[in-house]
Length: 210
Image (cartoon, rainbow, N blue to C red; front, side, top):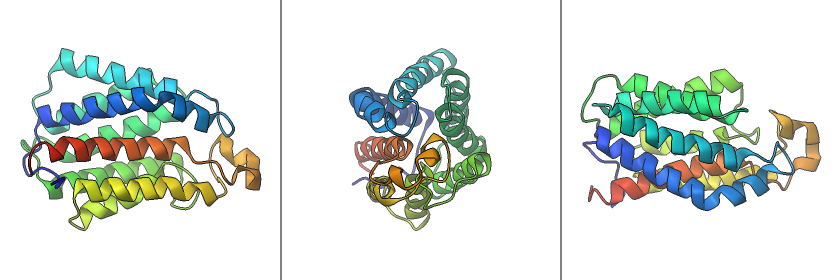
């Protein structure tokens, strides 16, 4: 249960992102509260707007492959979400989609490789590494779990632990870095959102029965 589907389709990607949008809706207030002391207090509402736009874009375009669906989703996030969240989440999905190419369906190993390409693009864009209290602290261990052959549920658990680890870190990037050690004790909202993204993947693949 929870193993990444051996046959992830465009419809499967849409189900994944629908679950992510629902989770963002449910946690928008929490994400904004986390962002308030260390950011612009808009992470929750920004990501909520972006994920709703993604679902509308997928409905309109009806991409034929998993890669095309993720490219469309990523491009939509970049164009609809301001601040750092849009470019970072958008780049993650778009580069993952590009790495998947025209494959249809996509197996677990290909998805892990695609997400690795997405992670590499995010670190190149933002310059953050693990240990700097950013979304990378959740994204990197989740990708590594999948690369090791772990289930989507295991990747989600790794992302959640990575997000929790930012409680004890001094931020080195973004507005949170202005706080220095005063930022310790504040969980990074982007890392929490990444945990929601992988939890959504786990939920989607679990119901595939894979």
